[in-house]
Structure formats: C-alpha cells, structure tokens
Image 1 (cartoon, rainbow, N blue to C red):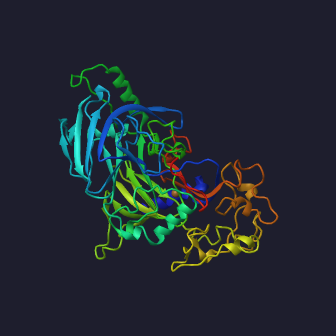
Image 2: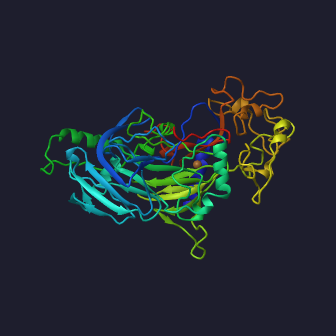
Image 3: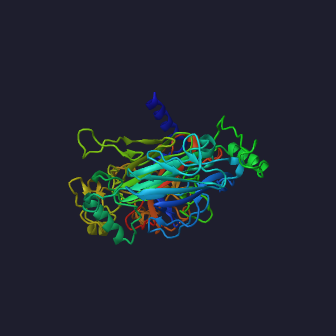
Length: 530
Ligand SMILES: [Cu+2]
C-alpha cells in the first residue's frame, strides 16, 4: 500500500515537474550556499519573543521564536564570519556543543503576556531545571520570567529542541530549534585517506572547510566532507493571525489574571506555508544571514563536489510528516536522535537504511550521508572526450582506484571521475536530435533551453556550455540564457517534498519545501559563508 502510493506520487510528480527528475545544467553568476551554522556555548542565553517572518508571497507572518538574549559566546563554523543572532528567529539558534559538555540554557520569556508561560524540551537528554514554574512537561518561564535548563551533551548527533508548553500552539508559532553535538573524538579514518584528499582538493581550489567536525559520531563510518542542517515545518496562517488578534486585544492584561490567556484553536489545521529552515522556496536559496531575513537567518542551498560525503542533519519540526526526496542518490541513515545505528553482529558496520525519501517526523532528527559521483551516467560528464576535445583529453587522465574512481590526483578537475565513462561521448554531433553516435542523446536545446538557468549542457564546469557546442553548433541559442557560459555550470537536482502541495507557497507553485542541490565542478569554489 505504501509503496503503491509512493509510485503513484512519483509518476504524477514526473508529469507535473519534468525538471524534478532531470539533472539540469545550471548557470549562475550569483549564488548562496548553505552550511550548518549556529552558536557555541556551552552556556546559552536565550529568549522567546514575537516578530514577523516573511514569506515569498509577500506576507509577513506574526510568529514566536527563540533568539539570543545578548551576544552569544561564539558562532560556528569559524569560516562564516557574517553572522548575527537576533532576539527572535525561526528556527531558533542552532546550539553547537561537544559531547560530554555540561550545557546550560537560560531562557527568558519575552513573549507577550497573554501568551503565558513558555519552556524548552531537550528530548534525549537528562535535564535538570532551576527556577521557573512547574508545567506539565518541564519547568516553565512565566511572562518576563526565567528558567534554567542544564544537561550533559551525552550523545553526538543532531537533536531537536522545542517548546514544552502548549505545544500545539507554541511549536506552530515557531518555538523550535536544533542542537548539534559534535563527537568527543574524531576517528583517524576521517582525517586520512580519501577524506584527506577531499580536503586537499578543497584547499587547492581555494575553498574553506565549513565543517563543524570531521565525523558525525565517534565512529569511523561517520566521516564527512561537508554538512547541511535542514529543519522542516509548516504554518497555518489562520492560527498566527488569531494569536496576533488576541495578543493585541489583551495586551495590557496582568499575567495570571482571569482572561489573560490565549484561546486559539489549533484544529482544524490547514497549513499554507511549508518551510525549510523557516523559509519557503525561493527564499531558502538566498544566503545564510541575509539581511532581508532578520528573523530567518538559515538557508537551504546545498552544494557539493563529486565524491564528497555530505552529512545531512535533518529535523522534523512542526506537526506533519514531510516526504522529502533528495534527488540524485539515496540517503544513508547514520542515526536518529543521536542514536548511531550499527549492525547487531558487526559493530564496525552501519545498519541504517539507504532511503529514497527521508520522511521527516515531528520532533525527530536524523543524520544521513549523501554523495554524487556521476557513476552510471554513461557519458563523460567532464566532457573531455576524444575527438572534439583532444587537448583536454590528453591532460586529464582517469586512473581507476579499486572502486573505479579517479582518486589518485586530488588537484585534478576530474578528481572522483567514474573512469568507466571516461572519454565516452554523449553523441557525435551534440546539437539537435542525433539518433546515433553516443550512449546518450539530449533533447534539442533549441526546444528545451528555456529560461535563464538551464545551460543546455550535459557537462560540469565553467566552460561546460562552450564544450557542449561541438565543432559546428551553437548551444544554447544566443540570448536564451542570462548568464555568461563561463560562469558556474553545475548539475542541479531538485530536493523537495513529494507531497505536491508542500512545494507551493500559499497555494502558488513553485514554493514551499523545495531547494536545488548543486553538484559543482571542482574549480567552482563552494563558499558556504554566504
Ligand atoms: Cu522527487
């Protein structure tokens, strides 16, 4: 039943969104890149406050969120320097700590008085509290009051935190965030071998290392080369507007007095906004800490190079599950809520599933590994095939390692090339519908090269469009792309919810839970600081 539904959903998505199942070559002159940015502790002074968050349909949504009460002790990763932590943000500040640390979170309730008490739950940790008032699930901070939570960061991995007070309303309003616990020890495997080679490649092309650590857990199978954090949630704007109306009407009431509380129904539930890190597509593709989103500092714009192990830290916030699909490969689940999933019989082996769709679950976090190598494309995606590009072919050898990849020269443009496809032509005459001559034939670029993004090239790299023209043709027709062919040309894969309504913003397509994952050629510098 489940698989039948999944198949039907995939087919209908293919019909509606042909771009969703294609690798497009994307040309961009300006682009933002993501990371897993946050603040460091181990003491965090937070506040819960109200503010308006913006959506791409022009709406400003009254929301509640956690933010920084004063300047945080630090920001991470260090390679990102243009940072801020406002008094309210959605999601709340990402708390970055190290395994074994004693974490202290001081929470000041800065919500409007009629909103009543608030709190934070840290599921998976043994929390002790100081101060505050007794609530159903934990100690709470009364309006203008404080409460302190203390716990040991006992397990590495990605964890959620969220309000433990009137959760149907407060989580909906935006009171949630993530905790990243870095492992106490980094296995040697993560700083040697191919992971060291990936670092060599990054520095050769002038890239910074934006990782928070080299491993997700204290385990050699959890090494990674790049990382991203994505938090999924949805919002019903009717709930937010009712909360605002009641807060406004009761604004001067006395905390605890009869009637000084909100009666906002949270059912029936009709969310219209579907958010990744508090933003809807295309806003999620704008930079981290973009000044136009003072209360939504985190973006969703993953980039990677072929061969890199990319750690995905994903948290389900809000109330609904979201069937999120990372196109281009499956995601190997490492662990959930800080619990590394290992084989029961072989502690050296991972036992998490490789998932086509990583369905997010409210309150639950997972860590997973994703990579793209181009293996199986059946053409040379570096485009250095003999015949039309003999010069490049001569200077770019592909020497297969034991797994078939070109990994011996980290500074080569085709580091991690799948050598079985090396020099394999796409087609003899790459312009138009050519019936014979190569393993793959692309559609006529005169027809499909529409819009500013699709470069019409099946190749990676700065001159991919030029290389796609072949000896006689001109691809794409001049004037059909906005960007210079010499700028970034990446493979773009849509990462999106497979619930089609969730890739809309207030019922307008495209929007919602959608972002583009870009596979960048080596010489394109991935700068996650923007
Ligand atoms: Cu999909």
